[in-house]
Amino acid sequence: MSELYRDPVYDGATDPKVVIDDDGVWWMFYTQRRASLEDAGPGVSWVHGSRVGVASSPDGARWVYRGTLEPSASDLVLDASGPPAEVHRTHWAPEVINDGSVWHMYLTEIDGVPDRWPGFARSIVEYVSDDLRTWRCRGPLALRSDRVIDAAVARTPDGCWRLWYKDEAAGSTTAVAVSHDLSDWADAGIAIGGRAHEGPDVFELGGWFWMIVDEWRGMGVHRSTDGIGWVRQGGADAVILDAAPAGGIGSHGAHVRDGDTLWFYYFARPADAAAHSGSGEMQRSAIYRVALRVVDGVLVPGDVDV
Image (cartoon, rainbow, N blue to C red; front, side):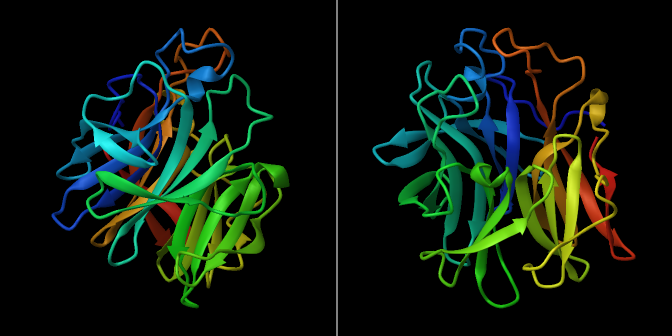
């Protein structure tokens, strides 16, 4: 399986979210890590200071870079010229949904460009858009802590909207909030506890609700009848996408439905990727996709794109 997409600016495309607009155009929003920027700063500065990268496609397989979502006052606007050399805020893991009338983005934001993981507040901020290009800020969500990232939003059979997210203050597990109108959110506790993880993605397929989470060794899978109570698929160590292309591991992804096919887009870093001089972590990443299907009540990866 070959790489589906690589970011042409910093070669660090991660956390992809793909949607299809009313004209049939596919849009990818992703964290544009500054992987190739050796002077990004000390430590993990290169993972911070990121913008939301944007690409489009006629079919979900052939992608063209469209630029980045750049701050304009409190809003975000697609800028084809890409990111500026100097940045003062970090944007991660865009989640994009349509409520039937408008697009919503739930974006992880961090003030500044931290050079280490701990000690910095993180929030999930909501934006809305009519065209996927200009986003109006509705503000940060009041959630369980000030260490929240990686939103996923879906409507459950009880008619409520649910927002799942990683709460680093709760052992890096998945918390959940519930809303009747996508405006007022109430804490609903921990949805998935246990082993630390991040990047939840929730969808319905084959008569079940599914949640996929990134465990940094592959993807943990959880199944539900109602999107509220969850049971892990397989044993405690069971994962999918633990063997990605070029020796990497499947990481933080999200689904998109195209007719009868449900695609799961995710990122991976090849095992031989050069390490960043400031942190020692592998830098380069690429986007891949795989079709998911349900066989005898089990979620399995099916066909892959080449």
